[in-house]
Structure formats: C-alpha cells, structure tokens
Image 1 (cartoon, each protein chain N blue to C red):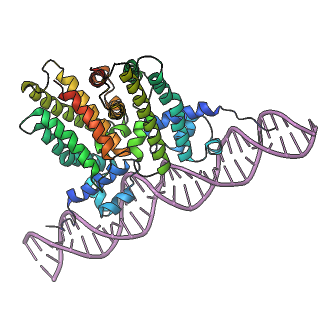
Image 2: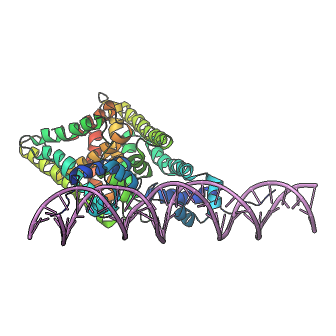
Image 3: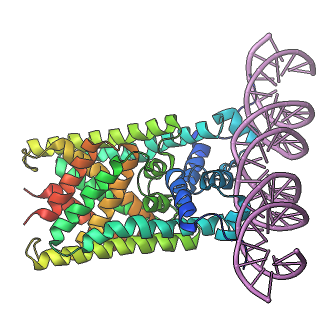
Length: 195
Length: 195
DNA sequence: CACTTTCTTGACCGATCGTTCATGAACTGG
DNA sequence: CCAGTTCATGAACGATCGGTCAAGAAAGTG
C-alpha cells in the first residue's frame, strides 16, 4: 500500500540503546543518535516519538534483551544456589567483553534520573523489582533444597543480592578488570553460600 | 587594595555541589547553577573557570566534606569491625535526611562519565581507591583483633565492601526507604561479621 | 580625593540542543 | 499506469547551551 520502511526497528533501537548505555541520557544528542542509528531525524521522530520516548523504548529493549536473559539464568531449573552463582559470574564475564558499553543501563539510569521524570523512574524501579523478585525465587528454591539456611530472611537476601548487582555494575564501569570484580563476587557468594 | 568578593567560595561551591549531586553533570546548566549559587555568570567563570573545572571542584569539595567524614569513622581508633558497621549505618542514616540529594555524588559520577573525560574519571577512581584503602585498614585491624578470620583475604573483603557501598548508594537513589536499605546492610555486615 | 584594582552585572556570542516540516522518492492497490 | 500513502531527506525553527566581555560599582592606597 505504501513505501516500506528501510530499516528494522529493533536493529536501530539496539544502536540507540548502546549509545544511551555508554553515554547516558543527557549527554546523548539527537544528532549523534541519528548518525549512529543510520536513519534520518524525520524517521527517528516518526518511528519513536521524541527523545524521552526513544529512551524509554531503549530501556524496554535493554530489559528484553539483556536483563531478561540474565534473569532467565536465575529461574532456570536446578539448584537455586548455582543459579545465583551463575548470575554473578555472567555479569563479570560480560564486563570483559570488548566493544560492550561499561556497566549496566539500568544502574546508570538509576543514578542519573533520581526523582525527576516520573515515567523513567518508575520503569527503572520496576526492573529493579523484577531482579529482586528473581533473586527471591532463587533463594527460596535454594532454601527448600537445603543449600541455604531456611532460617535466613529470603527477602533481605534478595535485596542484598540486588544491591550487590548494582554495586558490581558501578565497579564494572570504573575498574572493569577481572581481579577486582572476581574479588567482589567471591565474597558476595560467600554470604549466600555458607551453611 | 580592591573590591572584596561578596560571597564565600566554599558556600557557593556547596550549592553547586548539591546541584551536580542531585541532577548530574550534563543535566545541570550554567543558568541553573548561577541561580542556585546566587552569583552571576561572570563571578562563576572568574572564580571557578569553566563548567568542567567547577565540577571537579565540586567533587573535591564533596570529597573533603562528605567522603572524608565517612572515612574518618573507618579510621577511628577502636574495633575495626565496629567501624565498618558504623560506616554502613551512617550511610543508611544519611539516606533518610530530608533535603539531601539522593545517593552519592561519587557513585553517580562514576556511572555517568565512564571512559570519556580522563580528568574526572581519574579523580573518581582515586576516591574509590581511598575508600577501598580505608576498608582494607579497618579489615586488617579487625583481623588482628580477632574480630575477622585472619585467613580471609583482606583485599577481597575491602573490594567487596567498596562495591557494597556503591550498590547501597544506587539503592538509596531509587528506593531510599529504611526497610530496604536496612536489609541490605544487615546481610552485608553478616559477611564480614562471621567468625 | 583621585587612582588602581577587583568584583558585579547583564547583554551578548556562536554553537548546539530537541523538534518540525515541506518536498520528493518509493512502493502498492486499483 | 495512475492514485494514494508512507518513507527519506535535509533545511529550518526557536530555545537553550557554555562561555565572553564591556561597563559600572565598590573597596583600599597614596
């Protein structure tokens, strides 16, 4: 019926996501976005709306591609304790990849937006909630299997693990070397691993 | 000899620091800075140089006023373990204060600048290094006093505690309620507190 | 009181910000 | 092959960005 779009939405959204991820919302201009995404301004506004909406879409995409994959390892069948271990080791592994933006888009956005901009804040909060919930499920599973002392508070453990993941993302941005991150993860896992 | 300055440097720098703290570097415009600082553009540029230099001065001030005070509790004479406990409880306490910007300027800046801007990055790295070093001293002190198992790696523990502090700052920005932060700190302290 | 020096003030600079829009190209259903 | 619709293109918009500067005000020194 009409002229077809010459780009795939998810492909250019991926590029926008990575730009926001590495530079942050405010420091990423529309100019740099269109250059990196390989589309024109008109197409950007026609497809994604304004900058803020594009940013929300980028976070949503990050959620679907990056976060969900990580959380899937937490919910994978089998040992809950092993799942938690896998989660953190995957994070360290990801931090080593070349060409990958440092840290985590959710963590970065959390420290940037704060109170302003209600929409973004609630979306970030929802993602953190999903992470905590996944940790909670894994902890409960591990407790039922006798891997973690059932007397311990699973909610507190889940919150601790969520906070630890955020801390790790901050460290991954400033000192992404293996040694440091491995040290952090090793101790983090000792907390949950002890009987 | 000449007309004296009508404002105190540290006083207006404090206000700039809080603005950077709550809104981040990029989202803080010179316009808003001069309004909040209560001085004119000319005075700002005459006293602090350009925006980036002002930002570095704000971080330096944060270091001197906020971070150093926190680290002082770590180096205070007495039990190293108690010092570490104090550190985290102070952080939770600070997060409850009204009117105080959420989170931590160092953590926020760490997730915002990343690789770009060498000067700021190295300053943030230096501060994180100071934090880790202070934790390390407290851990070693606690080990000598028999409060922490001497067989454990003090460097790894210090890095873990540094990362935990960063994570707590992220959490304090998005969910600053006591219950959550208390849960996180409780588990964090269990790690180091066990025999 | 004059002179010198520094600070304050507000207008002003070009560049870049996010956003819009008119135009022509590309495609499909009739 | 034409009509109708969407897309691509790039110029252009006002607003705001970081930064500068000329001129007046305020102080101490001689």
